[in-house]
Figure 1 (cartoon, rainbow, N blue to C red):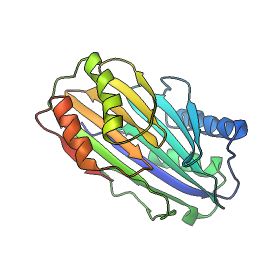
Figure 2 (figure 1 turned 45 degrees about the vertical axis):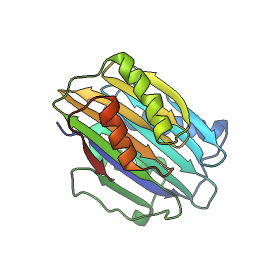
Figure 3 (figure 1 turned 90 degrees about the horizontal axis):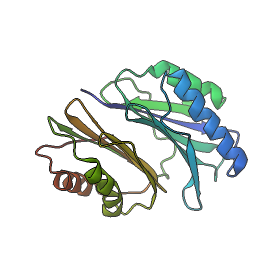
Figure 4 (figure 1 turned 60 degrees about the vertical axis):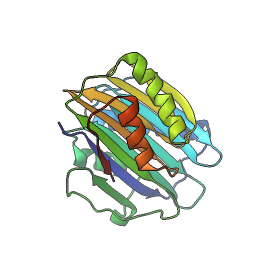
Length: 227
């Protein structure tokens, strides 16, 4: 089973806003995008405003997916980074088209995208000064850890990677999310394979995440993909 991620990043000429107006805009986007790609929300969207990192918003999706958005409004044009996680058959053109229309991106050079496991991409770095780092951990042919272990794992992973944990949502032993000030983490087990998606705008050491996850969850094998 493959678990892919689609990353969309863009430059937006109109500031999103950092207050209630900004939150309303990104919530509207997250809900509209989930409908456009045929996904179903697992909970209401949430947002967090950081003095250092800007406005972040999350929408957990049923089936262990998630949409995460981060806005840097401290520049002109604004820079927006979006992660759509957990889809094997994501309608990529529809996700890109909806995003382009929602944020009124008219110039093809102002929106880029890339996806794991495919060559489909027009990627270039629109904001070299903004750190973004992504890591997908996969453990095939493993038993699902208990809910109690998963509940401990997510906060301890946050500490291991020196991430400020804002909240954790545990559905059951198969699906959970951590929201960090600097992005977050999605945990999902399905068809005897475990997946941990880590995406952050703060630097972390991938090997720490790999070693801790393998040891804490008692996994015999773990594969890592940085993208």
